[in-house]
Length: 107
Image (cartoon, rainbow, N blue to C red):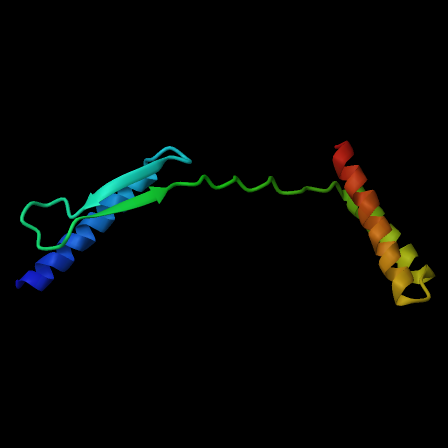
């Protein structure tokens, strides 16, 4: 192999090692790595700083009871039939959603 292939391979290995180390860092911590770390490298040294930010866990899925779903459908049906304009239909949907949200908070 010539020097370009060796340098590319060394760079890829260092990137993979850095990524593996970054996964083991505490959230919010800053990690510094010096490149190249091999003696005799022709590349100038540089510093790479990585800050790991934690990802928030996804919220739990919302599970409505069959009674709550039926109540929402009933509310929508009554609201849609009573509406005579688009604005009234939107207001009715908003009200049905508010009631659904209240039932979810009571669970």
